[in-house]
Image (cartoon, rainbow, N blue to C red; front, side, top):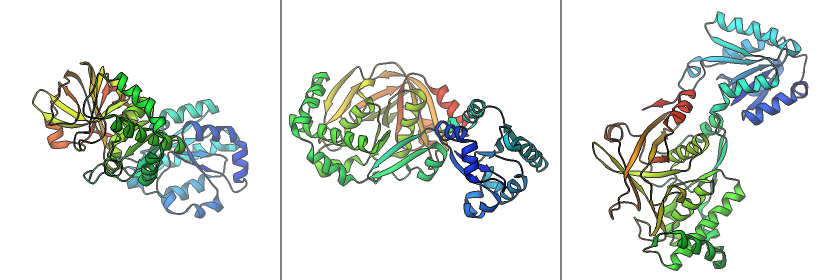
Length: 416
């Protein structure tokens, strides 16, 4: 979130930082606030573009800033402010020191005279931070996401505006060259991979297509991806996985399964919208998620499938090869017949979502689909065949629709 602080020409930026040090630190830490201090003499240095839309909050640091606020207000693009992503009300912070409350009251009256709603957040630091978190901070997911390569070529509608992610949800995205990963896979010692491979085989119900050599190469991919995640301090990542198949003769399916269980949200094919769906499931619902393709639809049920799944979601697992290529290692997970939430958060600015609760009625297996398959007792044909938000959707254990809807409603996101 963005907060601008207004001060009079009788004070300096240093005065504001010192006077309000504790409050500013807490707003930055607890609300992920990006803070800008503005005085009469520094308005122009902030640039016209940065002042054309209303920030999430305006902190009044001193008296005598009423005309400063008016100058900024007159530069604001009101149509943008009233867009689905804009703010229809002005939030001001004023704790009362340095005549700040008096100035805020004058500004509030000015807003009312101009047909605009506003409110003043006033009180102790605890009360101010709590109020800002309640109003705006809940929109912050905070995190650092890695993009291993570009989205797969067939994903023509699954990107997210990265500047929007950073500004709205405090999610930072970084690019990771696939060559770095490919080189990393090649340098993992065989001895490091053996133990992980043995443990994976031991916990599986069966191993079908993959050889011992296939298992070791898939584990090397897991260890190389994990190393980069640690080096870059990633909370989540998505990967252009088919390039790994071509370059290394292995897959990242096993790596994604293991890393999801280790708390790093991991998605396939460079699909950012689905990764954000998985990331929200982890942050809001506290659950790992299964990223899957809708594959067969009837009027009573829907089957979804993919070649990787967090192992913790499964009753049992079978080690398989990758469905499309027949190469490397994939996971066939046998899921419990239980309650699930089907979810997708989509759009370039994440302005739409779909959520439904259902029960698993079958965990089938067919050679015509990806390795892990699940059938839910929900008719998705009206939604998917006419209004779908992309291909991939995520499946979450348990019933979490109400938690997801609360988040979406709080952030003005449309349910399709």
